[in-house]
Length: 230
Length: 406
Ligand SMILES: Nc1ncnc2c1ncn2[C@@H]1O[C@H](COP(=O)(O)OP(=O)(O)OP(=O)(O)O)[C@@H](O)[C@H]1O
Ligand SMILES: [Mg+2]
Image 1: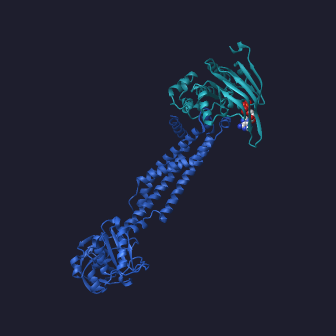
Image 2: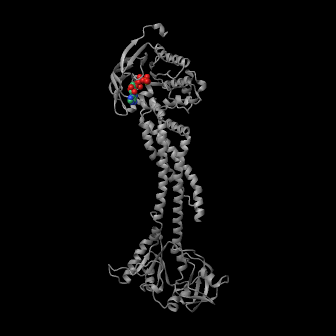
Image 3: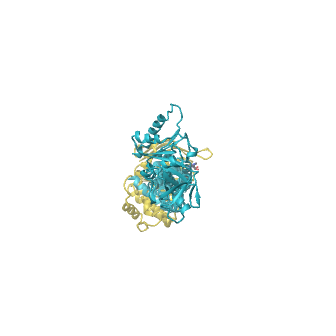
């Protein structure tokens, strides 16, 4: 599913000084895997996820997504891939606050080239247990509910790959557990999930952990203790 | 399909940010209202000018020939070149195909006209009987100078409404004897009031007598102060004017290179000049109006640019779920287009009231040109898109990664 080879990412600070966010990262993720990425703040987790999500381009190296070499793709083609193949979930939810839950969920359909299907958006909300909140403004929902709306939005175009950048980072324990339950369901459906997290207990849900430090992979291990997953 | 759905998104954004949208609409509305009101002032003024020109030239199918070179304004027997003869008038009528009929005029301004103890100095016009028809004048009371009067050099007069007021007050003037330069004339008619000419002077302070009487019994002059040729087809007036010019040059034996000793007024040319859409007034009005539209455009640009920086997260989110740069550009341009054209519509509605008010102030009928209205709404939409294109371009350049980090 994902094959990154020797990618690096150099951000430019405002004063022009380079920041090496990623150094020669090579990762291969198969379809259907549930991978977490951990690391200290500033270790490059988000930078990596943004590249995996075709939202950003690596400074060097190559990236193949589902067999396509997307390193050289145009803005249009990358947008198309984000729309069709990738679902993004963010720490800060990124909902339009003065827009209803169901209208937030519909946004990816706008760019899919087909009609916005209200019924499908409502079904997606029901799947995350928010059918009753569909017509509420996003700003009126709790953090956990907002994140569930965001997940429904990420799933609306049925992507094979779901990328989540600290999806529980702003949530309390109960809400986090609910979100993780949903992610496990998605994984059970056969989706590939890559999740950035600080939290070891969250990371323990995954079968594979990648540890980043200062922009480099320092550990990439399958979690043996199968029972911890169950 | 994508663009339809995107338009819906744009409409929702306009509603979501309604306060900002309303301010943008107001900016454009003011621009359009300024444009429409100024346009109607210009149009009203132009129509008023056309009316005054018609007053002077009578119907628009007459070519006027006056003696002397580049004479300006009204001439009279006392200050004119004796170059234009009765025979010239006859020759024009006879030889130029496009001419329907020719009226002759011999006029003076310094003749005393009196009735009993009242004395005034109106314009005295010796005219042929067809003068009335050619000028589009109307007789209010009595009758006009007839062909018979002219042929027999009758001492009869038709007076303008100002003259009637000055000499007769309320009394009926018909059949009364007035003295023109001491010679007695019988009043046989009164003209309907004409109002003011292009210079603003009254056209009603006038006494009309047969041209033959004027020439032989009053002024003792054998030349004319004006020949008026009525053309068969008003569209031909320019051609007829040229033909008359050729004929007169030949009759007056002017060698090539010599200046004309007459001058010809082609109504088409006069009208074109006076109603020139590029006159200074219209240019100034237009300049102010465009400044108004420009102001509206700047309001759109400023508020939209603010909006784009406030909506960076939304833009980043849209990009993350599949919008490309073109999509973002499109949505923001669409929003600008909708806001500006509805602002234009609103401004047009407001200006309706404004135009009525201006018309009432100018004491002229309101000119509300539907086409100009549509044009101004279209202009508003164009202004919206043009001035919205900078913020829309800014929006399309938002870096999603940076926008979503904030
Ligand atoms: N747009 C940017 N411009 C400049 N520097 C950046 C930019 N984005 C990231 N960086 C830098 O790159 C490094 C990696 O950032 P990144 O956001 O990937 O870290 P992270 O592991 O996600 O951290 P966190 O856990 O705090 O989210 C950091 O040093 C950060 O300051
Ligand atoms: Mg991060």
